[in-house]
Amino acid sequence: MTTTRKSIHGQWSNRLVFILAATGSAVGLGNIWKFPYIAGENGGGTFVLVYLVCIALIGVPIMMAETMIGRRGRQSPINTMAALAADEGRSAGWVALGWMGVIAGFLILSYYSVIAGWALSYIFRSASGAFLNVTSNGINSIFTNLVSDPEKLLAWHTIFMVMTMIVVARGVKHGLEKAVRFLMPALLALLLMTVAYSMTTGYFMEGVRFLFTPGPISGQGVLIAMGHAFFTLSLGMGAIMVYGSYLPRHTSITQASVLIAVSDTGVALLAGMAIFPIVFANGLEPGAGPGLIFKTLPIAFGHMEAGTMIGTAFFILLVFAAWTSAISLIEPAVAWMVENRGMNRIYASVYIGIFTWLIGIGSVLSFNLWADHTWSVPFLFKDKNFFDTLDFVTANLMLPLGGLFIAIFAAWMMKESSTRDELNTHNVVYRIWYFLVKYITPIAVIVVFLNVIGVIEL
Ligand code: PFF
Image 1 (tube, rainbow, N blue to C red):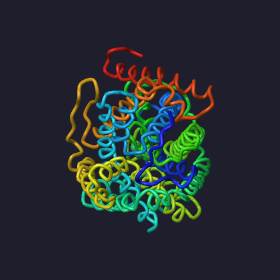
Image 2 (cartoon, protein in one colour; image 1 turned 120 degrees about the vertical axis):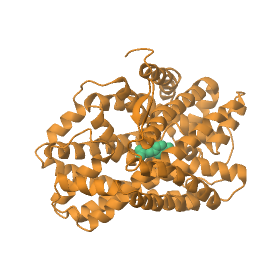
Image 3 (spheres, rainbow, N blue to C red; image 1 turned 60 degrees about the vertical axis):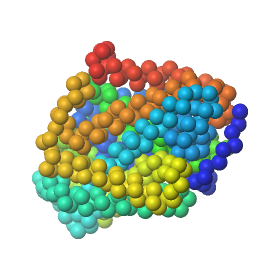
């Protein structure tokens, strides 16, 4: 059955805009900041391989499922789930999936904004020439000075949250569309320049080997790689679902999903190739943690021709990449408040922004005053502070769990005629998608979870 629902929030002008917006959501701090440091912490090679397999076999099919569900429901993820559960004659309890996404979105944005704040501050560091000929010790102390000062971090976090609220308040057409058009290609160009610098360090192959030579990996490492596949593609929490709800009817969801996944993965791998040669050339630690790119890339900018300008431009673009992701993190919640509370977008954005900002203070303090306040949860994690816990719980538990239920809903709860109609793709492609979403995704997510809690051993 074809549905004729319309979104009250408007529609993307065309297919390209959806691809840009979804790519804007996918490409962000996850690719440039997070991927290199978690790859470094988990030993490189095998981690990267697991991540790539998860992108192809879980990420792309779930992206298709989420977009499809969003387009069919045409509302915020909470109301979309309610509407489709009713259409398909399923339990009203499926709205819980929408709620979990909204909560995951708040929690992720609360710390995402703090890290985006680091990138904001680096724009000014770079522009003032602080990276010129900088040594690894020098950049280490610049970074430590920044993160050990809660007031500075709070100020940058606040600025970034205000920026996010402004774009979200302006809405789909004026806010989101305009923000994404030119930024992605520019970011790619600067990333390529940084890779070119890394090639001159004499350690390029060492970096590449680290990224692509298989080695040992822990069960936790596998969970983190899978969680990152969800995080980096913005899956499992309704962000892509809500963007799908603004998608015109005749766009190919398959093509768009593959294109988005390929660009996103390309950016992450380029970031890795830019960063690891610098790590090895300067005797740094690949497992240096969340500060990794902030301690390595400035060395490249400090030593290349016109590095002050290139570095400044790079951090500006990184902030833009984070910005276009951040708006998608709260769009599901804002869309819901507009639909159910009759609120206008401006108020909805402000309320949600303030709430997220408050939670973010916990992450601000995690890098200084609360750094040593850690706790452990048996089977799941050891000695994590507030920031590390939020990151772990959202990216590695909530998103894969969201993805698991999206897969179950799309393949087991929706009628085949509905998914066929909405995906509207070649029969072979449909069959492959159906098989992956019906069996492979649920089994993979469950097996990785069971492995982490020690019920089975991979
Ligand atoms: N995909 C974004 C990144 O890689 O930086 C982060 C993100 C955005 C995660 C939106 C989840 C989401 F819904």
